[in-house]
Amino acid sequence: MIKVGLVSLGCAKNLIDSEIMIGHLQQAGMVMTPEADLADVLIVNTCSFIDMAKKESVGAVHDAVDQRGASKKRAKQKIIVAGCLSQRFSQELPGLMPEVDAFIGLDQITQVAPIIQKLMGTKDLEQENLVTRQPQYIPDYDTPRFRLTPKHMAYIKIAEGCNHPCSFCIIPRIRGRHRSRTQESIIKEAKQLVAAGVKEINLISQDTTYFGMDKWTEERPKPRSGVDSSKGESLSTLIRELNKIEGDFWIRLLYTHPAHWSDDLIQAIAESPKVARYIDMPLQHISDNMLSLMKRETDGAYIRDLIKRIRAGIPGIAIRTTFIVGFPGETEADFNELLQFIEDTKFERAGVFNYSREEDTRAAKMEDQIHHMTRKARWNEAMRAIQRSIEGFNVSQVGRKMRVLIEEPGVARSEMDAPDIDTTVFVNKKLPVGSFADVTVKEWRGYDLVAG
Image (cartoon, rainbow, N blue to C red; front, side, top):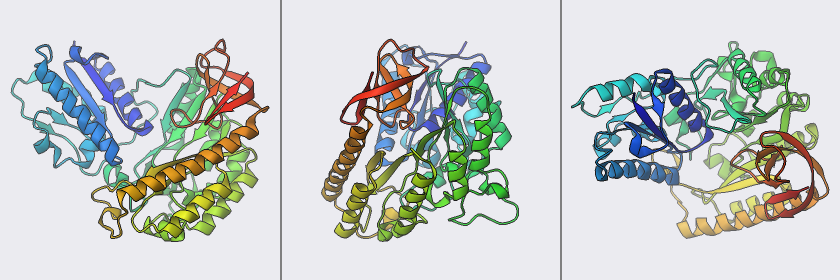
């Protein structure tokens, strides 16, 4: 019986890939082990989105190789590198990591069991590089999968890949062109999850607002095409169908691109009470100069108007966003405009990335790269502005009643809080984990709330 260990790094989209690999391994009769020393095969599912993630992934692979070399028990252990790092650097890694037994990409996650069987069945097998250059894979509702999330919450990947040309991002080169699942497939998966006791379904992809647009038949979507139910399956039609599923659960929208928001989508959310009053919409900047250089397909006026429309159309909505500071060419005026925008807009949830120069992106080749000390100073200042904004919002929440989902004894999340991203609501430790509870906010501590 083959024992397999797995190290899963990176985002929720990568986590689903890990869950699918485990599902296929178990279906093939292999046994998962949390102890690397006991594994016949160790899979490292890597991330490669920004430099920090890349370093973490490389470090995890080197640790696995070093520990195998230092342990007699692990001398025959096979090491497989999967995920975004192997997909992104498919040509370079085999030469840089000769100790790794096999590299697999996104198209191989459902083939991991026969790949392992081949590795284990051959004594002197040479290193294998099985990564395909343009991944096509997308999961379905009946794809074998073993969830690694708590019983009460799950992710559903509604699409894979991305068509956006953002100059700072390598994801389209790693994950391929956008490809949507069918709405029927997603609904079937959601029903299975709700029947299994899931209380929160998080819809994810590289761009959830683009869902269905790649299947338009009458015309090709434009960079600013809005979510449109009249043209076939869309995020709006999906939301409405998910909302019809019987049961007590939340639907959360993650990774929405501002360029595709529409009145149709706003109305669909407003009319669907099971959709959490929360949207994740990375804006990246507000300066027209920066948005143009970033190739974000939006401008400052559009973003300001969109936020007004969303807040007017969906009462009680919490908007979560992220910004990038220190992007090449960012002037003091650009940065000050961003700071003022953060102060004025008062986001309920927000974060800031210090620009990461990624090879093979347009931004990496740009002139006017910002000095790392300037980038760090701007990041600190922007984070202080966000902290003031969120603390001001938290003050307004004292005395408010809210529904929360209990994550662990004494710890919960509100509709405004996505898993592993946002803030915490501290509650009575006797409230049962995995259930909803109605609580009243008594006080706040920094980013977090305390409820009774």
